[in-house]
Image 1 (cartoon, protein in one colour):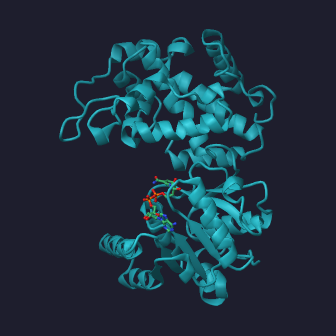
Image 2 (cartoon, protein in one colour; image 1 turned 90 degrees about the horizontal axis):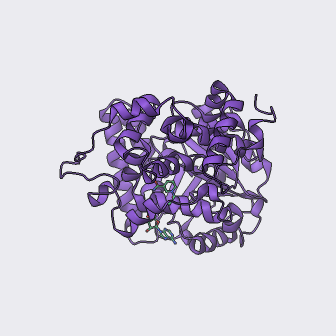
Length: 411
Ligand code: NAD
């Protein structure tokens, strides 16, 4: 396998795409929100792309959406007419994986259904040459579980793009137990050549971003449940004092309470119901009541027809008293301590590097600082003491300091 796509940027990709036979062609399976974006990125990077969708006409419709998206880029001066036309010319569609040519890379982006993905990847592994890289865009499944029936599973890995793939730079390159290092190198270099910022991790529940972000939502929900402060005040603290682009509670309304609960529940189940990831009663109740957030007009907040939040003013006097006070009732210190703890624990278990964790959280969810860098600033010993205080206040295993906070490995 040729891994010489690194460090040469787009020009090399164009040359590779023209000269290297099957490595020139990328297939994307599933032409929904993610697949169509990924196909556009691959075509813009110089590959011949085949976009496949099982629903009749869906791939062709996606191609029209991509054409419109390219027109908008031209309109904004971000691409020339020639580049946009050439990108679209390199992109064709198909209704079945039976119609695929031999490809260098196939990226699966069908709905999050393990049996569907498992069958599809097994089928692709039979149809494609033995060295075709097989990638899944799964957000939650273990790579090995998807690869179970794949022939030559050392070429199977995760390429977890963020939504929308044309805008979001981050790609988590996820390796399973059987993935070979050469394929990980190749995929990482390829993502760089596509103009993306790849980070690597092993196939751990939630990968980097969806794992480390759990306490961002969970701590805020617990503070509301305990009556420490109302949602608007907590969101205000995290936004205005913490520098997060959105508060955790308004963000769950934006994402959808059902979607956020499903991601959290998946991590909780895959970690053997680790207390650290246990969903809150507050969120379960919201979902049961159909209060899913912005899309249903109510969630944590209630929304007017024009999308504005109704009757939720932060209590700035209360916020002033909480921030800098005991960690148990300080929304910012408590949240950051738990983010740091989660991030260093991932590194401690050898699942990702500290640099990659920080890059992932800054680019994937736009945190103002990487949590490990943040922990270094606060002092890992201070964070360990804060987690200890939380554990005393709420025993049961949720607040377990990671050994990495005190063993000096990340200092
Ligand atoms: P989507 O529902 O928008 O699109 C999925 C597409 O796959 C549909 O067009 C459907 O017709 C097609 N499809 C279904 N079965 C197929 C088959 N057997 N062969 C070919 N096409 C088939 O889904 P999405 O939001 O684009 O998500 C796709 C994947 O990406 C999921 O695994 C999801 O977890 C993951 N993901 C989603 C996001 C996100 O924010 N939407 C972010 C990261 C990862």
